[in-house]
Amino acid sequence: MVQQVTEGVNIMVEVFYQPGHSNPINSEYLFAYRITIENLTAHPVKLLSRHWHIVDSNGSHREVEGEGVVGQQPVIAAGDNYQYTSAANLQSDIGKMYGTYIFENLFHKRKITVAIPEFQLVAPAKLN
Image 1 (cartoon, one colour):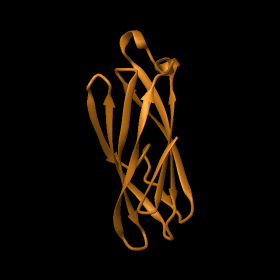
Image 2 (cartoon, helix red, strand yellow; image 1 turned 120 degrees about the vertical axis):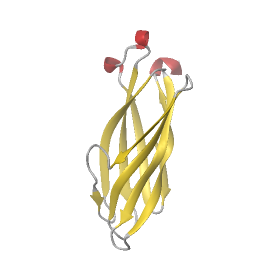
Image 3 (tube, helix red, strand yellow; image 1 turned 135 degrees about the horizontal axis):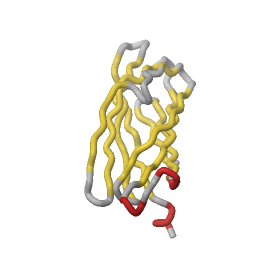
């Protein structure tokens, strides 16, 4: 697991290779990831948007942007956390992801940019 705190928001990431949804013969690799967002500030924050960089070891680089996460723009109370699971497909068995979230501090009405720490996507066979 990797984690990083930015502006009082802690982002934790866990990765799970999905062999049942991958097809290495066709260069298709699916990785699920679970994100836990912990609000360490004294005020509620609302997740407005995300911006991901998805990089394959074959040199492919994609960017994905959009509102919220998994169709929601959660409000996270002070001291609380929010967790979701999503997935990314790669054309190689090694890659990485990183990015940013835009939050709004609902007390100050100020937008904050929170880093999503870089994490590795590696098929288990590559680790042997």
